[in-house]
Image (cartoon, rainbow, N blue to C red; front, side, top):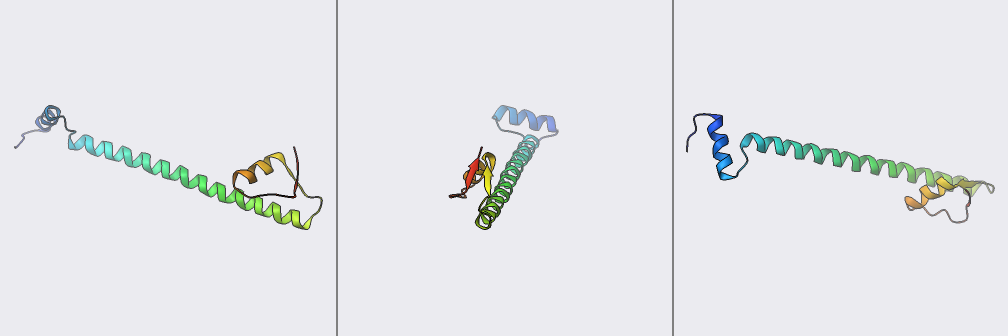
Length: 93
């Protein structure tokens, strides 16, 4: 089947229910952009979680050297959320 213009191609794709090559490229590009954005957000979240975990480990180390060391509520909550147990360290809310 040969076509003389892009309009004829578009009409063919409309009749057959398929997406034209032009729109297929646009859709593929949009999906790629969405995928990259989601991957970026997940990557940033993982980097932030690693930083928060490092803070908790630093606080735990400080508490082992200083008997009057304590955590405030948000610090305790942060350490729970990243899976670092802070047993034996007092928490002030």
